Image (cartoon, rainbow, N blue to C red; front, top):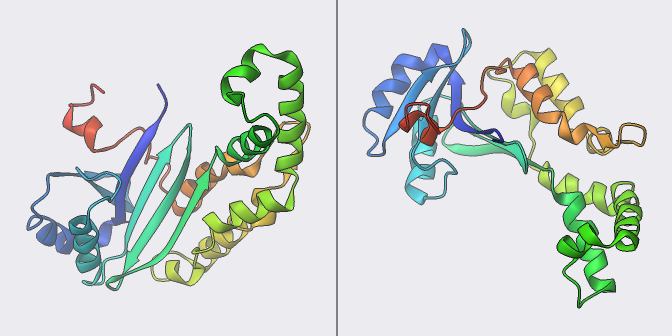
Length: 222
């Protein structure tokens, strides 16, 4: 089973104020201590898909409580949205599927009558071509540009209120698109796939893993 983690993190010092306001929210939730620096709450609306959820987080953050919605889907990617002062002040999304999507897009134009994802499994010649195109994609300017779109709303200054200067500088290094997309041909991968662990390490939220609303609601059975 692949990891799926999503929840809203906040510094522990805001706990009394946050719990007071959270109790007035008309959506089911779970509240959990993550470690000595962070707490988290988990909403039924795990992906923040409804306007009511967003408005609640905006209102809650307006009480001078920074709220970091974090998600980590092991197979597809990770990201965050930061709410503070009644606004969404920063966000980022890292996709692990972008290189595959771009590769299949190129091959679909070459072979419009073939289902690329299925045919590549059985066709050795196509598989070789697929690998060649994938290699070109991950080294391309366009790939770097597409990754850059996902982190274009990273605002380092938005973290200044609850992270140290050193931590903010580390985040700046992490969200450098050139570093994120630097491909190691020997390892066959880039920093993209390790970036979530580095993000968690910088913020000190390594314990935020394998947890979400559905998991907690099931009593830890899902």
